[in-house]
Figure 1 (tube, one colour):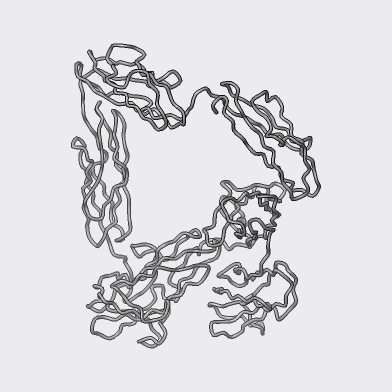
Figure 2 (figure 1 turned 90 degrees about the vertical axis):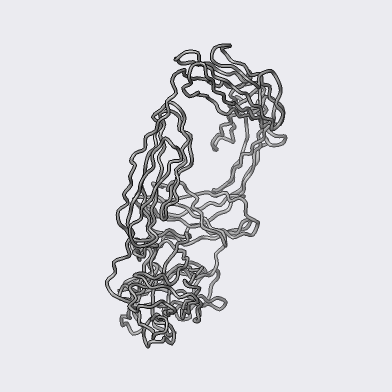
Amino acid sequence: MLVGARLTRDVVIANTGEIPFTVAPVLTDCGEDFEFETGSGVPFTLAPGESGTVRVVCTPQRQAVLACTLGLGPDLPAVALDARGVLVDTNWDITPARVVFPVTLPGAFRDTTVVVTYFGLDSLAIDPYLITAGGAFSILSGDGARLLGPNDQEEIVIRFVPTTETGYATSLSVGDVLPLVALSGTGGQPVSSCAVTPTTLDFGGFLINNSRSREFVITNTGNQPLYVAPGTVSPGYSVSGSPRRLNAGLAATYTVTLTPPGDGVWDGVISTGEALCPEVLCTGTGNYPDVAGNDLIGIFFDPGFSLNEIDLPVYRPHTAYVVLFNPTEASVVSGWECAIELAGQVTASDWTLAGNGVNGGVGTDFRVSLASPLPLAPTVELARFQFMVLYPYGTILMLMNPATNPTIAGEMSWLPNGGPAIAMQSYTGDEIVALVNEGHPVAVQAPTPSLTLAGAQVRLEWTLAVAPDTGCHVYRRADGEVEQRLTNQPLIAGTGTFTYTDEPVGFEPGTQLHYSYALVMDGRETARSPEADVDVGALPTRRTRLLPNVPNPFNPRTEIRFELAAPAQVSLVVFDLSGRVVRTLIAGDSLPAASHVREWRGEDDGGRTVASGVYFYRLETGTYGETRRMVLMK
C-alpha cells in the first residue's frame, strides 16, 4: 500500500455453537498504522447462529512491513494483521527484465527495445541511463527524465556494438525506485545451426480415426536465435506447440499426432518453419477394426469403433457412435432401423444421423431413411450422439433391440439400395451393446450431511465410522448448473465427525443450493451422500423426493431411498416394462418427515426370483409422485 493510503478489511465472527459468547475486539502492537473503523471496536454478544463483523482500517505511516494482532476475546482465536507500506506506486511493468544480445561480429551492431508501462492512477518518474557509460552499449532513444501518466508507455532503444571477441555486461537504470535491467552480449563470429531429433517418426498400425502421438525436439546448436514454427499439410497429421524464438543452446519439444482418416499407409512431412532445421518424415498405417461376423451393429465410444466400455466422470459430454460392421450386400446403405435405450443416470442429446438421415420413428425408436446413401465399407457410421453421466456410481447400459413394428419380424435391419432389408445382429450377441462405468466399485450411499446457516455461511457436518485417514470431498450444485467440487484436498477427521463451512457468493436470494460429499479411500471416491438442500438467505430445507437406488445396476439386492418433507401416507411399488406390479414395498403406510430406505432383493410378492432386465420403482404420497428406473443384472 502507498504510505498514507487507507484500506479497510472486515473480520466476520460466527457463533456456530449452542451458547452465547461476547466478542471484545482489541488491537495489540499496532501503532498508528491500524485502527478500528468508527464504532467497530465496541464489544458485542453473539447468540447461537448469529454472526458479527469487526472492521479494521490500515493507513501505513512509513515504508515498512507492518504487523499487529487483533484480539477478539479470551476464548476466541486472535487474527494476525499485516501490510506493507511503500513510498511509490508499484503499478508498472518493464519488459524485458533482462536482455541478452546474440553473438555479434565485432564492429557490427544489434538493437533491442525495453518497454516501460505505468498502470497506476498518479504518475511514475523515469530517467533512463546506463550504469557504465560508453563501452559496447548505448541508448539510442528514450533517455532523459520525464513522468509517465496513467496507461503511458515509453520505449528505450538499446544498441550493442562489440569491438572485440569477448563478453560485455552492464545494467540499464530506468528510474530511482525501479529495478535495474541487466544487459549482456558477446562479440564473436555468428554461427547459425540447428539439430532435430528424431527426423523420422513411425506411428505403426492402428485403427482408423483413432490417434497416436510422437514427439521431436528442435535444438539451437548455434549462437544466433532461431525462429521455429512447425506445421504440416499432410492429411491425417497435426502438430501441437506454438511458434518460438530459440536462443543459443535452448530446445523446444513438439508433438505430432496421426489420426488415419482411412485404411492404408499414411505418410507425412512436418516442416520446422526454419530453413536451417531439417524436416521430420512420418509414416503410419490405418486399419479397419477386425470384427468376426457380418451385418453387426453396436455402439462405441471412440472414432476407431473399438471401445464399447468406458469410465467417465459426471457432467462431461462424450460422443458415442452407432456403427454397422461388415455389411454383406454389395450396395450402399439407404436406411436402417433399431431401438436404442440408455439405462441408468444418463442423458443423451444432439443425435446426428449420417447421410442426411430422417427418422420416421419416435425418439430413439429409429426407422431411418437416408437422403444420401452411405457407401459400403468394413465399418459404416450410421449415427452419433452426445451423452453425459449424471451420477458417479452405478453402471450406464446402452441397449439395442428391434424397432417397433420392425420390417423383419423380431430383428434389427439395414436397407441396401433397391434390395430387401437385411437383418442386423448385436455386436456383442446381447441386447447390451455398451457399458459406461461398469468397472466402478458399487457404492454404499453415505449418510446425508446436516446443514446450518450462520450469516452468509453454510456449515455442513456428518459422522462416519471410518479409518482415521479416510477423507471426504465436498460438492455443491445450484439448480441448472454443473456440480462443483469445493475441496482441493480431501477433508480428514480423526474422530469420524467431518465439518466444512462454505460461503457461497454470486447467487440470487432464494436460489436453492444442493450439498453432498464423497468418501475418498486410497485416492478414489467410493461412496456418495444424498444431497442436502438450502435456500440462499433462508433456513435449510428438506423436500419430498425419490432418490436413485444404490447400487444400480444390481445383483441380487438394492436399496431404494426417499425423503419426506412432512408426514404422509406412502406407497412404494416395483413394476416391470409392461406396467405389471412386481413387488409392493410400502402399501399406504404413514411415515414421518425424514429420510427413509427400503431394500428390494429382486423378488416378487410371492418370494420368487424375477428375471434380469429393466424395472421401475414409484413413490406416491398424497401430493407427490415420481418414478425411477433400475436394472437387475445376473
